[in-house]
Image (tube, rainbow, N blue to C red; front, side):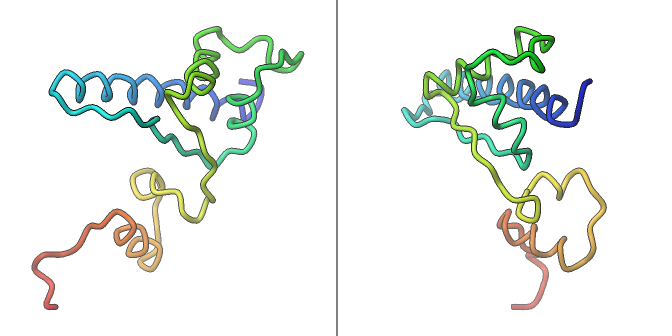
Length: 118
């Protein structure tokens, strides 16, 4: 890997594959939507690579399969958007969090303790 932006860009490719698979599964089950699939990242450089269709000397070594993200975004199948690091819901599953941050992300995910007194 050349830098963190490239690593994040490559991970967007994995996410795109999963999202397209889920969209196909839901379509097979009769649940389909004409709306684009939202995909969020807190990496500005990865989003720049995903949105920018211009060839760059620094990105010429990135595998061709990664560049299919650009096609999915250009065709409107996926909408890649920036989310601030403090609001990134994936942190809930990937990073150790303090109690306040943990509860904030639980609330954002609409997860509540059903046994807690109301």
